[in-house]
Structure formats: structure tokens, C-alpha cells
Image (cartoon, rainbow, N blue to C red; front, side, top):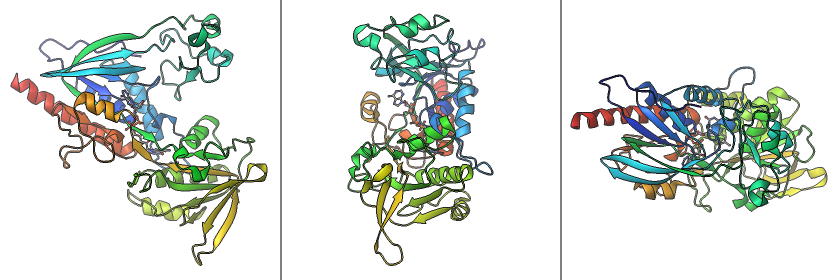
Length: 429
Ligand SMILES: Cc1cc2nc3c(=O)[nH]c(=O)nc-3n(C[C@H](O)[C@H](O)[C@H](O)COP(=O)(O)OP(=O)(O)OC[C@H]3O[C@@H](n4cnc5c(N)ncnc54)[C@H](O)[C@@H]3O)c2cc1C
């Protein structure tokens, strides 16, 4: 990981930008700013950089399906190698003051793993007796690759276990580290704090959390990334019939989430194609209301998918678990409307994009407006990065649902807007 910003050459003004959030939008904003010779402090509240998208699988079938997952890996590597970007992991903003520029305070919670010493051997992960206490990043470019989740670690419960610390051959683990406070100054801020995926427990008819073979698309992404194939959680067998249910937590006025998440049709079709490519015998059905059909060549892609995937325009009702953990879905026949019962081995819920959990607290701290859905509001609809504060800019899904490519484009725009703002500020001084 980087030690921090490079010295500027004599005569060069040193500008510093605080980027909040280390997902693809924050990584891209930070990297583009560094390319403009701006120093960046990148604050990520989680243990690892990469946000949601670093968890996604490559969805290539015969050829690349342009899902964007690999661009996150590449950007992550560029960021960790960029000396102008200083990364703060497991860190959260405590306060921000406007004083011409911005002064801020942070709390760093310890990762307990020294990135300089850790060799990614994974012994701590293997030996740990408490499930989930040692967490592993999704990419080999996550530095360090392992961290300790204090909420699950036995040492932080009753000091009863120090196995990871004792066994680490590099002495890279130190359980005694404590949180530290830090403060800093910035000339501008980019908010790239992302989204939260809809939790389908809020849609009880699908029995998520009760029926073991009902999973979310995020879980499917992780499974395909980690195992390279899809298996049923209940028995680790390859499912022969898979149903995707679209718009789970999107376009749902009962839940007050009336908006389209814009990514679920694309990711479901790409994952279905990737699974078909691996197991052509598997029958895949996608239950939907409408296909979100924008984007370059999307209509053609949809047509191609119809060769292997059945599309059913009906949102199923309750899901029932039967013998051998099979799942029964009821839906209306598209032709005559009669009720049909069909059995599947695995049901995937295409969960949507919800406003980030920390949006309200960040908005209050930064004095920013949220829109009616809870995303950060644009001050000028013609400028996709603008906020009601001239020195603060938006990037990625913090501002509203969008895919990886669009998040990267918007983050690049944010970096340009910051550079213009800093240039204007320099002229004013
Ligand atoms: C199931 C699913 C599958 C998808 N598949 C695809 C796909 O195949 N292709 C595609 O193009 N798009 C896909 N998307 C959309 C994609 O996930 C988003 O476009 C992308 O992740 C947006 O990146 P982001 O940086 O805006 O947000 P995030 O990925 O959410 O990253 C935000 C980061 O900010 C951090 N953060 C949050 N609050 C704070 C805070 N207060 N302080 C510091 N850090 C903070 C978070 O921990 C996180 O690391 C999918 C979405 C879902 C839900």
C-alpha cells in the first residue's frame, strides 16, 4: 500500500482532495486526480478497496460480455501503485469543517494485519476457530489480503484466543492495536460512498434466509468468482433448473423503491449466459416485468440470450420449499393467464441498488442535500457531479443507480470538475 503523496516539484502548488469511498467510483476519481498531479486521501470504511464490484465474477461466455468486472481489478492495481494516493482502510470520517477549504477528522480502526509483513499465506484464515473473524479480500490486489473483524474475533470478546497472532510466520498480526484518530486538510471533496444492495428479507414472500436455495444475485456473483461455478447451497450439487426473479427491491412502490436499478437486467442475463456456457444442460428462466433495454447493443444481446434462456413476463408469488430442498414457484401463464406451478433447484433474486447506509450521516456532516429516494442530490441536473457546495463533487452510485462503466465515467467527470474548481481557486488566491 502507498505511504502517501509525493513531493511536488518547486513552484508547483500542492492541492489535496479527500475522496470518500473506495469502490470503483472512488478508485477512479482518485486515480484520475492523481494523473492531474493532485494528491488524494482515499477513505474507505471497509477492510478492503473495491466496493461491491470487486466481488463480481467475469461473465465471459464464448466471448467477453463487457460486464466491467475486470476493469475494477485493473483500477485497484493502478491505485495501490500510485504514490499520490494515500489509502485509509477501515477508516471513517468523524467531522468536516468548511474553512475556505475543508478540515476533517478521521478514526482509523485497526486491521490488525501489517500489509508490509503479510505474505498472503492464509495460515491465519485456515487456523482461526471463529467463523468470519478473519476476513479475506476478493482480489489479490487487496493489500493486505486479510484483516480481523473485531466483532467476531474471540480475542475481542474475552481474550480467549490469539491463535492467528501466534501462528503467523511473519509476525504480521498484532491484536493489541487500538483505534487512532487523525485529522487533515483538503481543498475539495469527492463523495463516492456507493450504494447498498436491497436486502430481500424485506420481501418475505421469497423466503430469503429461510429457503437455503434462494440466494441473491450478489451471492451468485461471489460464488461464481470464488468457485468458478454455481452450486446449490443445500447440497453443493450443480442446479439443473435455475430461476432469476427480477426487480427485487426495484420498481416496487409498496417498498417505496419506485425506481429502476438499471443494472439488474444486464447482470442477470450476463450471469445466465455465463452459466449456460459452463453447463449447457442447465435450464435457466428469467421472470421479469420489463426488460431495461438501454445501452449500446443491449437489444441485440437480449435477442441472443433468448436462444438459451427462457424469459417469462410474470412476477412469481410466494416460493415454497419442497422435497430435497426444491423450490416451487407459482406464476401466471403469459398466453392464457392460468396459474402454473414449476419447480426449480435454485432461485436467484436480482436485488437492486438502494441508497448507501451512510448517506444521511454523510449528508449531515457535509451539509449536502439528498434526493427524495435518499441518494445525493445534484445541484445542477446538467452537471452530473454537482452538489449544493461548490467544493464537493459526486461520483458513482452515491448519486443514483448506475453500472460500473457509468460510475467510472462519472468519476472521471468529477475529477475534471475538481481540477477546474482547484484551478479557479488557485486564481482567486
Ligand atoms: C447484484 C449486483 C450485480 C451487479 N453486477 C454488475 C455488473 O455485472 N456490471 C456492472 O457494470 N455493474 C454491476 N452492478 C452495479 C455495480 O455494483 C455498481 O455500478 C458499482 O459497484 C458502483 O460503484 P460505487 O463505487 O459507486 O459503489 P460501491 O461499489 O458501493 O462502493 C462504495 C464504497 O464506499 C464505501 N463507503 C460507503 N460509505 C462510506 C463512508 N461513509 N466512508 C468511507 N467509505 C464508505 C463502501 O464501503 C464501498 O467500498 C451490480 C450491482 C448489483 C447489486
